[in-house]
Image 1 (cartoon, helix red, strand yellow):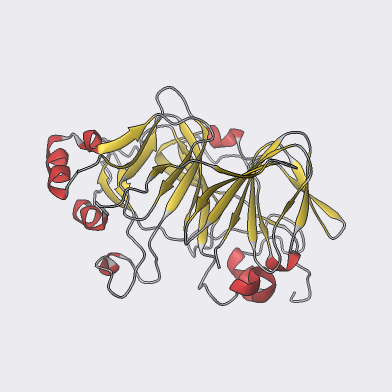
Image 2 (cartoon, helix red, strand yellow):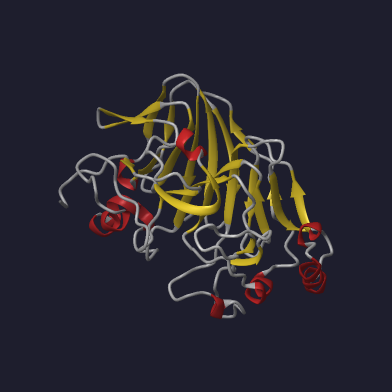
Length: 335
């Protein structure tokens, strides 16, 4: 197994039931949705013990991302090998037909972090970002608090059922980019479809849940108000819409959407061949519209709408050949 040369690794999506979800992920991903209930999330790259991504095809088909990284640490991660206990990013598509809970993710744990006791062992904080793919007239994104909002203000709003009045809100449109550092109060819904990149953490504290009832239990979902309030960064003003930075216009338009300590993300749009990947570091490619081919070692790997590929570090730069107009996201882990 250790002699297998690595190649662009495509992963199968992992669908997740969510009471606020819909069925629109069927239009984005080729893998059929299970059952007929609401599917809110597709985890498309997940190095989690409970939901591990598996390679979809090729010699490593069926292997989990954890097994790949264990078997090929240097080839897969390059100069980042040994830095992480697991692949440090979790990638998803979200179909928010209804509103998500108003929620908060705790910040990154340091020795002096007051929130350290709120994180289960082995978890990190959770900074995340969204790229809006589809939105409608009723779509909403809440990202951060209105200026000047204090913890006392928020507690009063919770008691009065008026939490939304204290949140910064906007009507999203396709191509919007939204940054949500850990400690940001946030929610979205009303028929919005987004791509999400985040730290590999699954810790969420619900502040308010719009009086949702879980059809599976007939009960409201539990809230974690005190934990959520303890995690909010009331002084942070970096959450919300970000302005794309155009880094190149040929051979395709290349926009940098996010650049933080945990991830960088570019959006690539066009129909001419372009290069993806970089020497001695892994990159992730997510095709969000159109189709194309990743070319490596004389082999073409088909990349369709909704597909995600991990490009192992040993591959270096690869050519991408669009088959018509294509929009893709390229993601890297900062050194």
